[in-house]
Length: 180
Image (cartoon, rainbow, N blue to C red; front, side, top):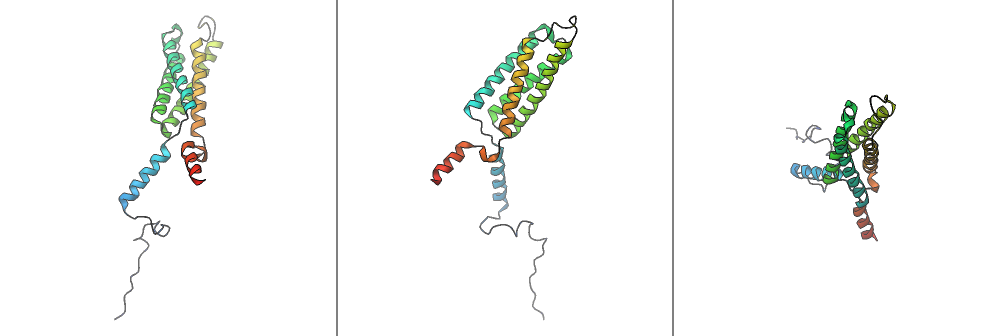
């Protein structure tokens, strides 16, 4: 009778078992919990007080601007209505992003802000170059809306494009002080 050796097949071990440190628990519920914590931490976005205040002012001005544009008589052109709708969406997504402070909402606000900036420029250009019989020219709400949408877009892009090494300054400041 030959001695039988237990040979483990490569299929029995998970693909990362060879690279797993020995002190890491292998319980699947712990792994799932650690993944959720990791995703939650990476999904959080730190917004400084000054940036949050500037964006909040931009959201309020953009909301007032969109309602002013809706009440004005020169929104009869379809592109003006589209711009008003996009200004409203940008303001709403920006306020949700400020409230939730999640990366996905910040990306959505940046995307909507960029789109509303482009459409707002198109509205201003159309009203500027259209015949005088169709429109008297661009209104103040159009220009203010473009400026606010552009400012919000720049703010959100600055926030979401910040490298991970420079984000979360409160946490990093605490770890540096502890190391000293």
